[in-house]
Length: 179
Image (tube, rainbow, N blue to C red; front, side, top):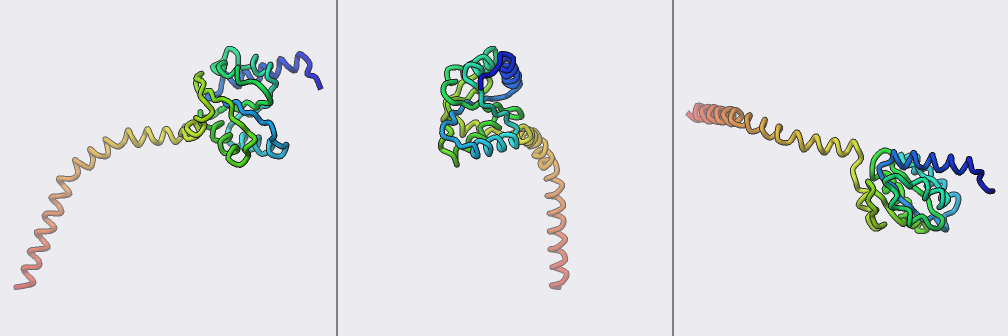
């Protein structure tokens, strides 16, 4: 069923808005994927905070123009699906990478991260990027390590003195028992 001009404009506007707000994008060819498998992929994408959309190639080219994903335009050939990471840069890569492991018919054609085009082989590296909360916790542990070490260093002379006094006291007690 052909789309009306207003419907096409609405699709382009929606995808362009999503593309301008997302952190990364993946283009994948879905030839050979069954309807049930596509439904599973969409469900996994929703759970992972990923916007997933099957868009006609001409509409997709218009939607990604004037965004940081303009570099993906040459990959928009054939039956493609667009996956945009809305929460963190690795979300779409995690969802697609997990799905590809069980369904070999989904073929990653291109990845764009911050306007930079990456080859499909980089999907594992992008999928391993930390989430926002993981990155914050790693940063906080790096920031707190010097302070923790300083506190331990400052506390050590006092602790050593206490251990020495306790050892002297124990030895005096042993001498008193032996006499």
